[in-house]
Length: 382
Image (cartoon, rainbow, N blue to C red):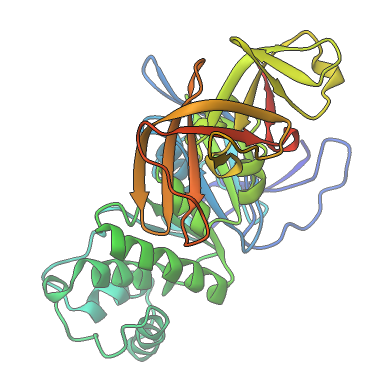
């Protein structure tokens, strides 16, 4: 990797990153974040294991994964709150690996908000600006603009203790964005909110990000949050990235069993691909798939989302390549949706169905026929 070394205001080594060892160093857009072989060890525990990732300027990227997978540690290394054991962090083309947190043009929003309870809203928001030496008149103007952006105009004189949970979250956002960072880092900021407020704030956060046009890097273990807000998702598991890509791509074309099962619900058929690559033998049934000649004779998993499976009465046929008779084991009512768990003998399938006056309804114990076309099954090696 080519690198031109310079020194930042704090005396930390920084350098502009080139595209590769064989290309000339070029200008990288403000707000770009690059992680190069990032690794973090805590004693004998490897929290992050060789992560390579590029976040584009103005992108909303989510680090998604279960507790302990390394997503928050990765975010803290980007912010400067943790120092990598090895590897590098580049922000806006500059090597920031050893730069102090306050020397990176980033801001961070935490799960617990971290507002000063004895301060007013204005004092909370302007605290960082005051530390930066911004004049009082300019601070007041910036606070007013930030409050308008988070839709809390006129809240300057309220105490932090007088705010609701959602309002506290908005003030924490205002405090982070008022310093006009190139990159905003958010570590599960909605985790302590109730479900309805969390859903509302998901929409609001995305709207704020689009209005600001800056890079957001968001950490969560919540699939719904990731799917609702993200431009791209990086799924982490066991300290490594399993897959990164646009939301729809990860949902419809998961590269691993972990991604398929963690990002939404799915049905898995495990077996061996036929010699002609057009089916997978799973237990005592053949699952028809789009031709996969490269996997002929190999072990594979077919992932089928619940909404892709059709359920009809016992004497009907959905008219698909894959059809089996079964018995309804369980039903789960979800308003406009209803989930059916159908036992087809070799396994139980989960099916999600829109409910309206034109669709037949089924109860526990009913005999049914279920099916799906060959082209909806996503085939994963293994």
